[in-house]
Length: 93
Image (cartoon, rainbow, N blue to C red):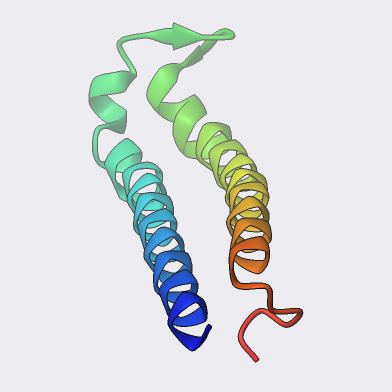
């Protein structure tokens, strides 16, 4: 039984770690990449604004908020799966 719980914890951590890495990559792209290429993106127009300006001023913030909600939703699904597989009532107890 302890082996099953340990295996479920290992899978849980593996999925959580992968999700964290993906979220950090998305964050880095929109925190640094968009601003770095803003001048090049300004050749395109979105909603009447240069795309680089729009993404730097509004788009990055919108992506950050959406990323938070998506990350929490996916993490809840991972946690629910872990609890079912391990049979534990507390996540990390």
